[in-house]
Image (cartoon, rainbow, N blue to C red):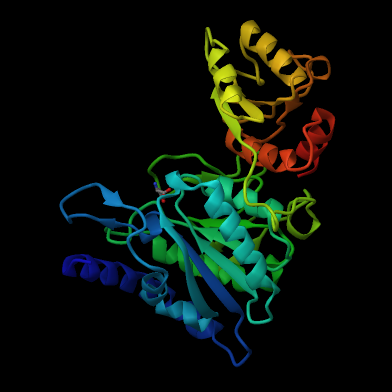
Length: 360
Ligand code: ASP
């Protein structure tokens, strides 16, 4: 790592320390501190600019030890240990890392030496990883994902404050049993509801259908109602013996959409498809006809929407009962894909899968 990079990194982080110093002194008590394990996977939060004059940067440059050392005041609220699970930009997130990460989380959360887990992660696919974990982690202990929109070397990097807040949330006993959470930009979101909604702004995450599950500022937390949907220890999905997930592809609908590309995906091994439909999960007549036939041959078909807000309703303009399709409800295409992949580890019966979409 270049000297200027280290220097800028330390300077950015010093700012975060000063901001949090007051709160930390008050919070430090004689009580045993919660034991929080930080599992790092890369992303912009661990990213560095390649040159201080350039706009671009490389995700996953700093290690988990760098991240912990960068915010020393976190040690006042939790006993921290770190592990590097991966060090990638989350655009490269894949099934292998998901399975490795979830198995590792399940393993460490079984231990009395770990009260909660914080996962540092890129923001691009954070909502997918968070929702995957929400469905396969077998524990009520807090699991919190955190990232940043600006690399660690940037002026006014948001990573240190986000990480501090994530550790504070993971350390709070009221975080238990809420399912997997995402902490970004002073907000706490439920993995089921959260979506990335801005490509570059630090206010990049929202839960458009249900709102955030809490606010967190310099480690102080105001909780809202927990989600009533099933998750983690109550979930029926188990990946402990799984080393490969079924392939599910997403197709973006548009005017004059042709279905041949979907046929190609099925030939390549897709067991399910999610259509990012127009409007309420609609698509061209030709695509509908092809999907109806492919479903009869065993393909799981989920109708979601390319529209950011609003549910996809069952049997609205498309007769899902007749076609054998699943309507995604509140789930966007990326989240629908995660749930469809896990559903396919159990069944491809659309009625049963629809029930899962209603339940989780
Ligand atoms: N491309 C980066 C990633 O997802 C963006 C970020 O972390 O904000 O890893």
